[in-house]
Image (spheres, rainbow, N blue to C red):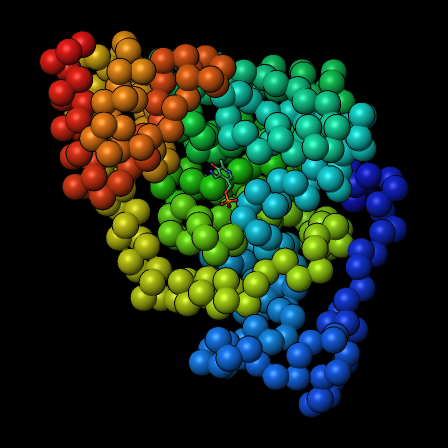
Length: 361
Ligand code: PMP
């Protein structure tokens, strides 16, 4: 069975919008897209890059990302952050009211939001709180997906906010069990901070695996909104038809391309090393802090921390000017805050602030 059979039946012959650019005609006077013949004065210095509609999938950027993530350019779609990729997958695969989306709370909220917007039934299989940390319940995921007609299974690795990567053999077990029924989407937004290999390495054996990557985290380009979905090339072509005609603004793709140049990448790697060593330092320091109940092991650029009094910790940090993510409304995390790792100086501010908490706890 082809992975295309997972696409909504009513969209299988859908060609999407046919833009002026998609006709791929050649010429030196371009009068086919109702663009302006003159540049905006603000655009003049940048080679008038915004006068024309952008390439829907900027080829050089697509090649660079594919090279970096270990796939072919045709297996990769660039979107406005991985948020857009999540939404496209849910819209293209799930028939409203019928095909379910499975995810593992506490986890990144956009899987639930996209499912809700599509009126796709949501299947929640809670993470298990074990000595190793918050881990997915693989047997329950497989059983629930089968019983509940899941079309999409989101595995977040490393998980936000749980922090742990999912071992590849577990991803493989889910993909194998659900072959022909569901696409297993491995969200690797924080993959650069982890040791586990990308699930993209499984894609030649499992066409029902897709991988999400982003430039928003390790690559420090959150405002450029460049995310990727990597999947079977035929599925990528379908997702492209479901996407907006010109999703990637030229200034964003230009910035992303230079942000992935050799010199910038070397700096990115150095920053990742810093984040990883800060992660160990803070994990140890916070674990020793009175008032801290538990610091979860993390493969990402944040730490999930349980406090005896999370409200006091949150307010103390806020008074010190440090804003962290309150997780108390998330299932299983009634006493937890998620602290993104900052610069070593910023992390010291976190520790200093929480040390004052110790006096009152
Ligand atoms: N996946 C996960 C697990 C995330 O934590 C986030 C952002 N917080 C995203 C995807 C979305 O990232 P972006 O849209 O910026 O690529």
